[in-house]
Image (cartoon, rainbow, N blue to C red; front, side, top):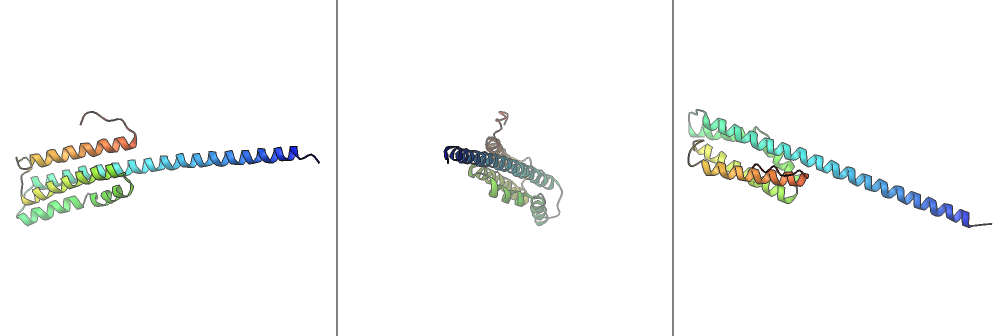
Length: 159
C-alpha cells in the first residue's frame, strides 16, 4: 500500500482547515472591531448631544423669571436631569477609552459648574459666567478632538 497519496491528502486537508479557521477568525475580529467602533460612535454622539442639550436647557432656565432662588435652583437642576446626560455619561464610562472618558468627565464637570452658578443666580451673560463658559467650550473642544481621533476621523481644525 502506498501511503504517500493518503498522507498528502491528509496534509492538504489539514492546511485547508487551518487556513479556513484563520480566515474566519480574522473576519470575526474585523467584524468585532467594526461593531465596537460603531458602538463608540453612537455613545459619543449621545453624550455630546446630551451635553449640548443640557447646556441649552440650563441657559434657557437661567434666562427665565423665577419667583425665588430655590425655584431657580430646582428648575436648573431638573433641566439637566431631563436631558439624559447621566445615562449618556455612564454609557461613555463603559465603552470609551480612558482619554475620552477623562475629557468627557471634564466637560461634564464644566457643565455642572455652570449649572451651579446659574442656580445661585449668576446671570447668563455676566462677567462671572464668561470664564465658566470659556472653560466649558475648551473642554468640549478637547473632548470632541479626542473622540474624533478615537474614531479615526481627521480633526476639524476650526475649534
